[in-house]
Figure 1 (cartoon, rainbow, N blue to C red):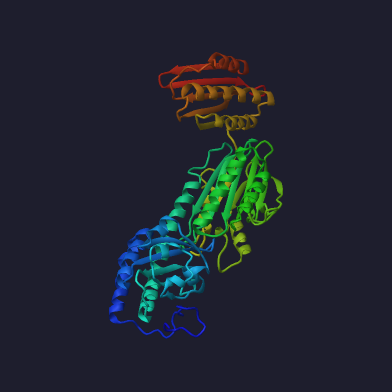
Figure 2 (cartoon, one colour):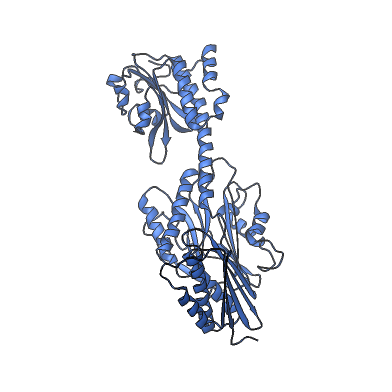
Length: 552
C-alpha cells in the first residue's frame, strides 16, 4: 500500500499531503531541471512537449501524457503525449470520473496502477501501446483549489511506483501546472485580443448630421478580457443602428459569443428583419445552441426623418441621453433577460425623441462598476460627467473621448466599451467620400434628402434632386470603376437660393455593358435646371444645379 492510503481507499489512491517526507536532494534537483525558469518563455505547445520529455526521462517512464480539462464540457482532452502520440492525433477525450485519468481529475488525488490488465481504462490506446503500469497525478492551480488537467506516466514493464515516485511526480505536476496555466492564459489573452480587435469596427462611418465616437479598452487583469463590443450599421429601412453588447464571462469563450452575436445582428439586418425581431432571433439562436452562452445587448435604431430612436434592451444597462437643453435621462431599460438565458424570452421596444442637439451614450458595465461602490453610484457619476456644451460646439472633443477621460481610472478591472452618438446641425454644405459600390446609394439618397430638408427644399424638390444625384453616383460606380474597389466624392452647397451638387470620380470611363449613359443624363436634365459633365484623363465630374422655389 502506498503512503497515505487508508483501508477502503480506491486501489492505488494517495491523498496529497498525507505523511509526505521530503524527497532526496537528487529528487529536488530533478524537480528543478524539469520545471526550470527557461520554460516560461515557450509557447503552450512547446512547453507541453518539453515538459513531457523531461518528466519521462527523470521518472524513467516509457510514456507520458498531459490531458487538459475542458470545464464547459466536463472532459479531459489529450493535449500532449510522448509514447502515446496517437492520443493527441486522434483527439482522445476522457469524461470526468471515468477511467484512470477521469478519476484523478474528479477526485484530485494521485492514482497508481501496477497492473493495467484488470484496471478501468477508458482510453484504449493505453492497452494497444502495451502499457503495463500507470501513475497519474492531478494538475492543480490556485493553491490546489482548481484542477486544470492530469499528468500521467506509464511503463511497458510492470512496475510498482514507490512513495518517492508519487511525491516527485506530484511536485513536478504542481509546478508544471503553474507553467501550463500561465502559458495558456497568455495565449488565450492574445487570441481574445486579436478576435476582439478584428470584430470591432476599424473606423466609425461618417454619417451627415451625426458625430460618432467610441472607445474600447481591455482590462489588464489577466484573462478577465471579456466580450464587450459595439457596432454601427445601416438598417434596410434606412435607419441607422447603434449596438452595444457584453458577453457573459471572460476569455476566449466570451469573445466567441461576442463574435456570434455581432455577426448575427448584421446577418439578420441584411435579411431585412426589424430591430425587435433581430433581438428575438438572436436570443432563440443562443438558447438553441445549449452551451450556457449569454450576452446583454442594446439595439438603438435612429430614424432621421422623424428624429426618433427605437430602443430594445436584452438585460443591458440603460443608455444615457442628453437633451438639447442640457437635461439628461437614462433610457432603454431592459425589457427582457440577457440573450440566450431563456428560449421564450419576450422583448419590447420603446420610442423616444432624438432631435438635433441630443446625445446618446451606449456603454458597458466596466465604465460604471467598481468594487468599492454600487452600480447606481457609478451611473450617477456617469451622468455627472456629461459635458455642459452642446454637441458640435466648435473646439469640443468627441463625447466618447470626454467621458472616457473623466471616468476611466485604475480601479477598473473589467473591459470598457462605449459608443457616443451626437446629433449635430447640418450646415449649408455637405461633403461625402464614399465607396464606389451600389450599397452606398440608399444611404447617399437619405443623407442628401436630409440636407435638402435643412435648406427648406420642398418634398418634390428633394425627390428630384435626390434621384438626380443617385443617378450621377450610379454612373460613377458603374462606368468609372467597374468591379475594382475605389471611391468617389459628393459635394453639396446652397448659395443664393441655388443647390449645386458635384459628383467626382477618379476612374477611367468605360463601356456600360448595355446601360446607356445618355438615358441617365437625360433623366438628370429633366430633374434639374442644369447638368454639366466634365470628362478628363483623371476622372469625371458631374455638376447638378437647381434653384429652390423658396430660395432667395
